[in-house]
Length: 372
Image (cartoon, rainbow, N blue to C red; front, side, top):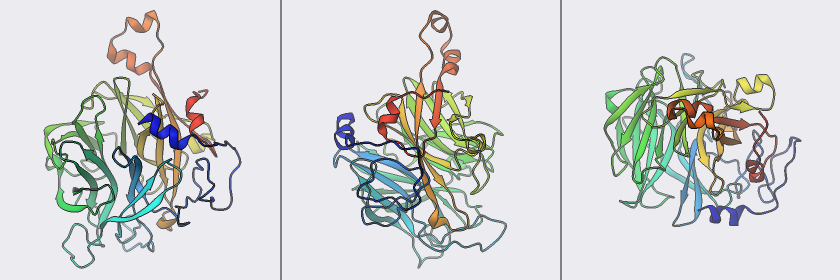
């Protein structure tokens, strides 16, 4: 997969520290511009909020799934967050992670069935898609909720193609608990093993559980973690035998400080490595550069190098929310005699995770480890 990405991405990359005031030219864009308007290949703003990336080996394309919020922002009840009536889950495809083609709404709202989980009056957030090699199916998990966020369920859908259409199978409360912000994660260390991580218990606790072999259900293995820490937006990733979990606090659409945890197993125990952000201003770091992470994507061919995908939510006009994609580095503990004598649980605490701020950046930046 690494050679595939480098084939498509080895174009002329240009790094700049100045900010653009106009929308990016979707045909000539050569770098990522966090917080700027991002147009698809049809010159329309990308609508894939709270999303994630799937690389499909069969089509040799990246697929970006996210919430379509291309409607008016409403505030029907001041007790609850502003919203857009549900449109559905959008899909975009790309060869190089920069230029995205709109593949349409692959899981649509059901405007005619008020009792449906997919009714436009409900909530459909943070979709993530896995490919199940055994079944040949693409499986999507989504946060499904009521307008007041009291339903707190996890929805699942499947398709035979990455571009859908996805067939909705229903929703559950995983392990009979509330499920709000969620993600699913295929374990790089164990083929055929996938996990769900979701915010539960009134967003005070994270739950981590194992998906079934077909990725459509959960099996009985799960744990509670980060108890009473009030974390959401879980974004797991893996490097060199260790698991990492990037999360945000719970402040609605408003940004807050990120935190990253490390463990030797997805079942924990998890240990905090603190705030990973570097660069920019102190205020920006304390707000995760005015964004909330939705996904951490490994960059093929560059071990320890990732992209943090984030959303800069615009509560007044959610369709105008922007994307903040930034380089994320993992640096292993130093290889010395002291480290060799440490237990694995102690040694992993010397791992460094850094999310660096750049006004403009390209994949070449990922090959340089930043100064702390």
